[in-house]
Length: 231
Image (cartoon, rainbow, N blue to C red):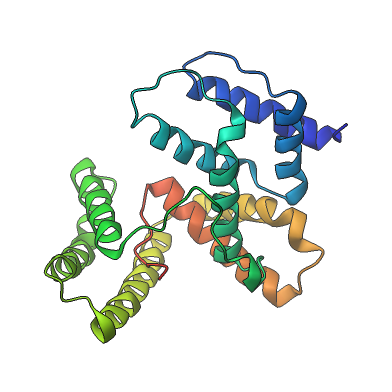
């Protein structure tokens, strides 16, 4: 039987699963319950679990099937999202950097295509101000180069390094645009996400992880893509 935090985690997952299934309730019981409790015991933040579930449903709805989806089918996506989050905030050992079965790594051109789409959509909706225009244009140029087949060998390596630099500039610009109250709220939420790992982390490691978690939350709040590419 799970602890009270695990039980509440399961309730939240079940509620979210119901929403994703258009209101059709699929109980998280038996082996499904043990699966979700396992996520909670691993320290999967609730928002990261939701992100993994979203990935699973996005892929599922590309098919013609419309039957309600059980939580068991989301396991690989949730664990992948958790691994990515842990690597991003620095709480994962190097041996954790392995994708789970059933997922495929995105190609560089596809990554750039998605980034440009997200950035241009943000510009059109007004969520990104004019100050982001030069960055959007730069990423669009990199996409054109990748499409032309120029991003191979050393050129591809250089492109990946440029994307990492652009990503760092982008998130720095986005954070500077936040109000003080928004920064405080994001800092608090980042600390809550990292709470299960804090006791095992040195102060310097926690500070780095906290900064990385804040960056992720800024992206989430503003609907920003990750420009950097994981080769």
